[in-house]
Image (cartoon, rainbow, N blue to C red; front, side):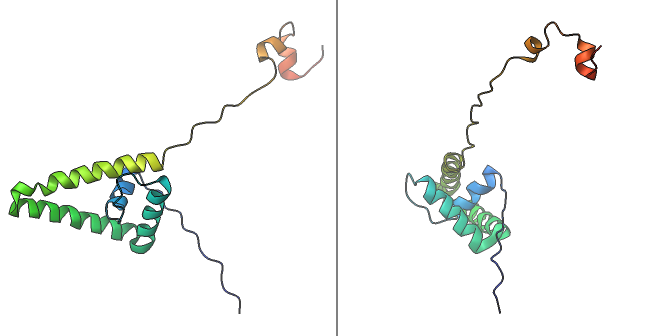
Length: 128
């Protein structure tokens, strides 16, 4: 019996959602490479799914607020916000949109090609 081909799933998330996924990952390096950021996001999404990542982030956010009430000097919310900002920077760096490739078009402009030709004949294709 042959095995079915593996299924490839594509999920499109906005930068805020990707940053939240990176937030709950184990990336702890100060300046991870683009490959490490993408691999961390891919691994966390494959392990927990989109809903699981959202739930884990919301729990981490809730914990930060609750710990801030218990230990106000530790500023857990502030640290949480700083880490989320750092995650946004890493996501922007890792998933930067590609620059459009310049296209070189050869030929002369349409107005030069039509110069001297009767416009009606050119549009209808009739030779009068």
